[in-house]
Length: 122
Image (cartoon, rainbow, N blue to C red; front, side):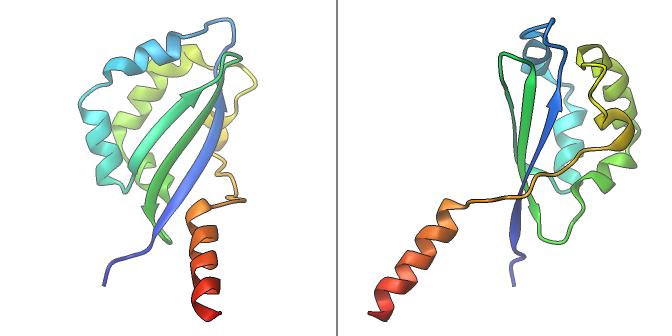
């Protein structure tokens, strides 16, 4: 039986005085990083950047899986954070406190699924 997938989202703040540098750094990530993310349950992972330095990360993982727990055990994560620390605003606490996952407030597929069920009941 397939496991249920859960979409996750988080935000981070890069230093707005360094526009585009975080994006440029991610154009060619270390080959180990995508493999590590995948092996710890991250799938369909994307990061979006606003001009003010706001980053929004979105990914899919299995329901009930803590997506950050697996990555916290991989030494590569510490190396990656040391390398990317220069991009982050001093107010960003994700380095010390971890990612804060946002609550999904709307899901189009769920809404459409509900409409389809309503139409079959009529």
